[in-house]
Picture 1 (spheres, rainbow, N blue to C red):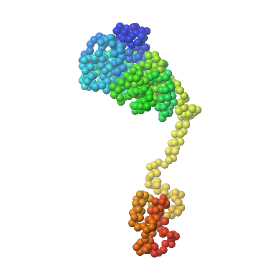
Picture 2: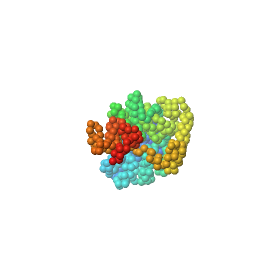
Picture 3: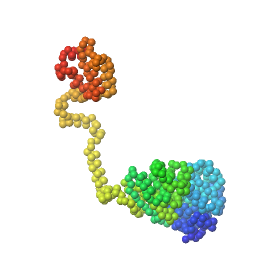
Length: 525
């Protein structure tokens, strides 16, 4: 069926032909006539099927008649992200080039001044993110009582990002006599509740089962090790015929680190994530569209609705946390009837996420190689692997129970009981009183630097003659001098430390217990 059968104006059909389109997609063919008739509509279709044009085209013809007033837009389109809002604005410029419609973009990251001036002139189409729209309304810069057509685009993404309360507040500010269009890839219960509350007898248009993947996208799971994912990705980028590709990560920090690593590998790569300024994000997207770079490392901010032609590959460096995000990520390729490839790097920690994705989409994703960790080992069935994990956990639990608790082992009474057991001590020490055992315990070793300093001081006080210590004035030679000198020399030579009590009790040149009385008298002074 050609576009001419959809009852669009000649000027609009000319703009569509200039864009290179001749036949509408399924969602466009089903939605455009209902929108032109002024009915509320719920459009559910998988990503990449042309949902944006299904409301942009009829809105241009609806708004062709009439005029805008200052600070009172005639239509409002709500988008979850700045990129989607900018993309819808591009569609209005492309298809509305033969119409004189004014348009304004209210998104974060842009100065209020330019937006205020655009609103003062009055606009036919206002495209906004919920947060910035609420800010402008709170500042008294915009009135929403003149909105005739409301579009809630990517409603399920609004839900994921927590915008539904803001959307409900915005809907409450609009007049009841309006046309409301809601488009979403899925229809979770909160979105259904929103539609029931703010829509009047909507027509349901569903051209594909929710959360189904595009049949033109070849999907593949590649087993990976968490530490070797970067090297594996580099090998895939070299081995695959990647004309242009988007690499998705779960975290902004991962986006930055991976982009830097790929740049070091001399690849033409850019990045986009939520922490970047709006101007930087737009610049990176423009570079990617202009083929200045052929790889774009991105967070899920680029997963929804972005229509970039010619994306041949999508890589999931990280498996998404939510199964729906997988469908939207791989939907960046295989658009407008073209073929695409989606490759996901899967680690042992991703098995549960892969199972949820396959349950949601109702299909089994092919594996490049058997995921050994999916079944425990290459030969072990999944049931045996699970049983082995349970057995290992049980053994670990028993070992933990048998191990004495730290709190019990450190209680005073526990220490007394252990010390009181006869088999826990040597036989000779069982009859020794407590004080004797304390005295027999070796003293803590003093600091080596302090000991050497003391020995050096004593050696300095004892004059040397020919390398030997000089005797006392009365001609006797006390053991204290000799012991100190020998100890210093032994320390320098790496010999035994002479601080032990047994060696200190014996004099030089005499056997133990045979020290003459006059030496003992001299030592005592």
